[in-house]
Image (cartoon, rainbow, N blue to C red; front, top):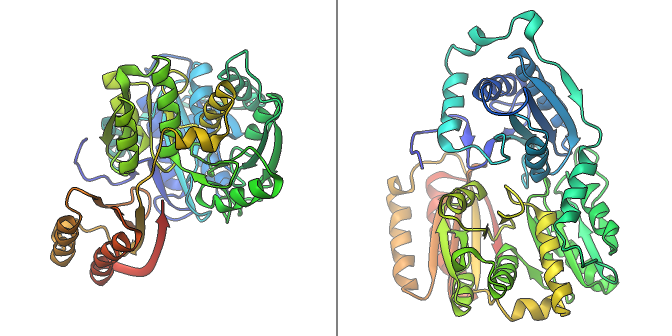
Length: 463
């Protein structure tokens, strides 16, 4: 990974508070210009696909991107609200030069972001992102604008959602249906609010939906993959077979079984890895995870003869390793699941279909399938809002606390302290054998971070 200091790009595109630098119309227009220039000579037709989630700020950023793309002589193909993996699929299937998604994914509504895909539907590598930054902060873009008669046009593609729905349905084996299955589906008032319910219903499922009425301001609010308790409660109330929760751009999947027990991305990975391995279809008997993957996943996979490889946090880093070394399954505990033989990015709806396929083939409830292949270790993650992202090694008291926790855990736990790639947040993750112990250890590090650079807000997640 290139260690050069980035001015715009984080772990997943460019992200920030909407209508403020860098997530404003001025930067968005330049990003549109830069991506058009970057892929001007790439294979495919002279067009760039642009989609978005359901945030109000998407209108401003979408228009600015169109202006930038067209000013460089490329056509802009607008598909409206569509899941992030749908943009990757449409860009590739339409032989476009690139794809752009306007979304801040799981972040609160005041955020927005811009993600990019190449002509094959893969997220951009570090070196391309850095070249785009160089163009934006240099003086070349203005000199490369198209002549008036060569500027691009903007078109709306009305059937993009239908194309993507057909593709998703085609990933379920032809001899299977979802007939007889009752599913609770939480779409987070996000980009999957039309796509996901249609897919599951057309495959025969009885679908109970929630958070499918976006109004521009309610994306991810007390719903979706970040708040799976809503889904779990409905599963128990309706005696459903399982629950499916997506995030704002529908590239993450969190599930729950028929008893309302939450199953995160690690659980879904274990289920899919075990099934693929039993059929001889798991490439090199290996799964690609991240530094945040639960120790329980590594142990559970090892018991089945499967290896776990860890990468930096971010689904594009997982994909880089998968493509480079020939693996076909990877993902994150946050819910990004990548099936390289089906897709080029994390896809929450596709991931749910893979798990449903396994349930149908085995004829067993999700709880039994999960228990047979995955046992999670106690894990706690505490998020500290910070005023700046100073290197952790430059904070001596934080480093002392980290050393003490590492010593206390020994070989019976794991610690990870890192900054979020999309927000001003420091994350402290501790795994171990005892919930009370790991919380106390996490608090010791959190306290030092708060003293040094804290903004005063801390949140907690457990698994």
